[in-house]
Image 1 (tube, each protein chain N blue to C red):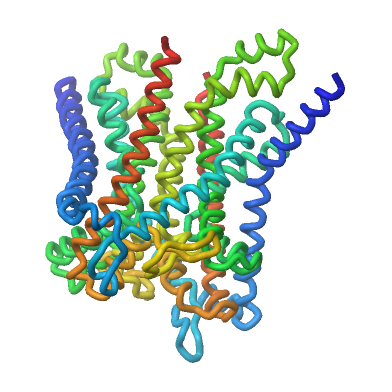
Image 2 (cartoon, rainbow over the protein chains, first blue to last red; image 1 turned 90 degrees about the vertical axis):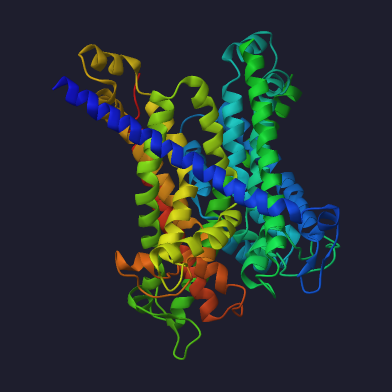
Length: 285
Length: 295
């Protein structure tokens, strides 16, 4: 009996190890393919020049810049909104129907597929508000998409600030808002920034929403205003890989674009994780 | 003093307004999505939309049948679940119960990398690596199949399932596990008879959210599933091309005249997709709240 249980345990643990090994292998294989095939395509010209010859040669400069514009645009909208909402929810909101509605809206927005955000952006920003297919429409759409992420991260950051800090400040006769501004926020800011940075990765990688709200198939110049269409890295990769003029010939360009996109997203995440762990160590001390 | 109070009130209102933005956004999203979707039914009966087995949006007469697309999403998602749930839960158990803390601290960020990779990069990887692999290994006429989509979506759902299951497993009180071990159970018996059942609600919520992610994923499925709108058989449909709801919207929206029936049909598909994920989210939240450990 006993030895049977031991044998079962050995088998089960071996299976768990194999499963974990498979997951790690997926990560390594995906990274390996993109990096090993992509790095030879990347050089200064690739990053700084326009696509040429119907996108079969040249660089991806406008796509990189387009992605940067989207990051700046959507963060400028979502970050203040998200942080203010989080302050309201953690510091002011009392349990009740209103708070429940806000919480529920956040978790449902977080679970809504990105292509649905794209449809909404198309119907509301592009068509109804008549902004047109543009950087602005796409940034607004992406801002809504990352809003729940920023709110959740900021809420978590605020919750880690000990209640004693607030009580001490309030006991000194400081008003609630002054307490939040001078005592709570300074301790919570690193956590909030981490959340915001993680959502930069989301913005850089999302394709479906911008496909419907303003990304251009090919636009060999930089956009001249927020009302222009734009190229962006993820959509450019999709176009090159599925409907470019010569899919097989442009493989190196595709790997290069994928690697640049991956580098941006992973670097951004690395920065976020570093800030978070630095901040955690600080709290422990 | 009263000046200070006015300022405090003003700030509270501003904060409340920011909080309310999400509610307003969700309402607007519903209104715009449903309104444009509903306009389809002026010219095309709801019953046909729900029961027609054909999606021929540009044929004459037009067919806007939801079924092939809905079932396409379902089959790809089922495949992804079958693939990622056992793998994800096993990995979560390994990380939280077996691995030594140093290794666990490496494994966690490694699995989180999967969450950071953009979907279009997964799609690209699937297209250049997995599609030919599936085609050659299974000797299929094309590698762009539901199965290929399922594998890619499964990999993408892994980080959600792993990190949430791991949270659920580590929040099981130690007393429960120690009690079981003290009674002479092996570590494995403790895991599958005590720890896993105790963490079941959290794990189920993780699986639900993983399903939600898989059903809503667009770029990856669009690039690897071949996109042919036929009702898939099960399981034979796994080895043939399918077209999901998400892929249909993303593929066709660029080419339809705004305001046409086809345009509205895509919004109707979007509405179905939204309602589906909405229900999944509510169920996931319910499970998580209902059975949370009360310590």
